[in-house]
Length: 76
Image 1 (cartoon, one colour):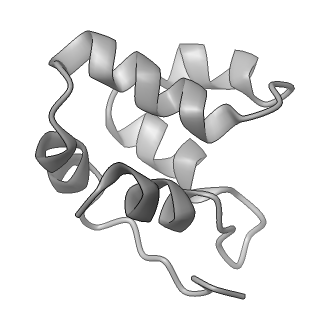
Image 2 (tube, rainbow, N blue to C red; image 1 turned 60 degrees about the vertical axis):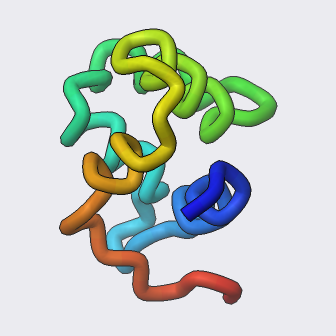
């Protein structure tokens, strides 16, 4: 799965109103940084960059890290 596909998935919200990038950031141990991204123009890109800096730029790692984050409304 490529970066665009991951970003598109993470930009959706769950039924409680949380973005999937927020849920994924918490699961990946980026919760403290995540709070600062909420006001950013592109918080998903901030999360992807921070995760890439932390773990290396491997989208497969991010894809594995986001497993279990259910995306109910992709494309809506």
